[in-house]
Length: 249
Image (tube, rainbow, N blue to C red; front, side):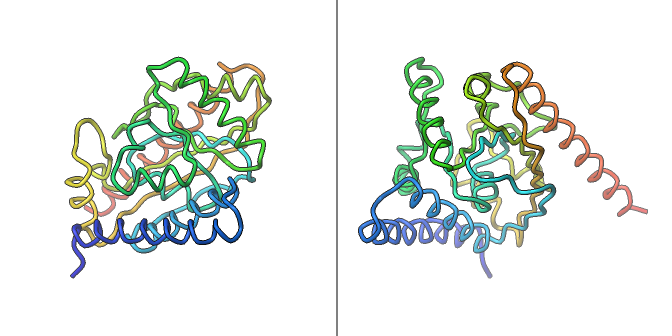
């Protein structure tokens, strides 16, 4: 029987294999941003498949080279969203120091940011803009932290200011887990949470892709994205309540 510990080992094995593959392909074809973005997508797909994450998809997948803004429930979000298109992520600087996963993130050209440092935030915006100009999508969690819900937290404005100033297309994404315990929040230890979460046969998650939004007003752009995600999550919670009630009748 596959246990949570088995899947933790599998996580690191998959990551190591993809690191080696990335390096070998990079030596032959050059280490480009596009190579990194496609490698990230392949890694995410391998994780979703082998960790037995069951994903229900709503909406239309966005075109490449757009700014994806999503609510943030767990580290699992990365694999769930990143499996659909070549991409990279904006992530907290702490990820860079994680064993194995941090090195993989560096190879994938993840954009690291220290939200408490003005210069770091400025630099990350430039990197996001440069990546998008290459036709590579960037995934951002503008809440700035993971949140179990229900609903979502207030968004940080920086990403939307960048998008508004540069006429960048934004696509809101709503992500929700069937089991609220799958959320990784607060000071919970990664290994403990991972083993507990993946001891289940399946991790069920719903991801909804919203409309492409452009607006030269950053506040309006942020409000539209936040409201779409909020409304979508509310609709999903109502569905779950109806299913629970129906199951007791």
